[in-house]
Length: 66
Image 1 (cartoon, rainbow, N blue to C red):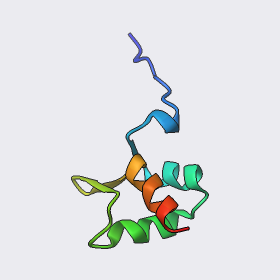
Image 2: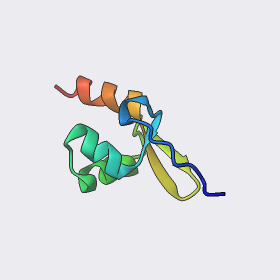
Image 3: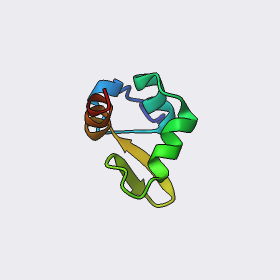
Image 4: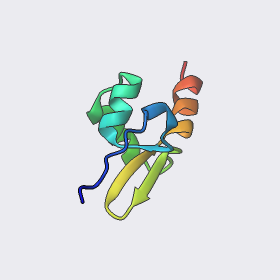
């Protein structure tokens, strides 16, 4: 039996990939990747070697930078 693929809209996800965060925020992938490398980054979620973006914290970070 084939596995069913479920589509979850970005606004309902808790964690985003760098690609999804770039698409969501209109900030470049390279810039987001650099931000995730900062030692005090408030929105990084490390899962093994992979780094994800905590969506709500990312939104707060962007709002605070205005």
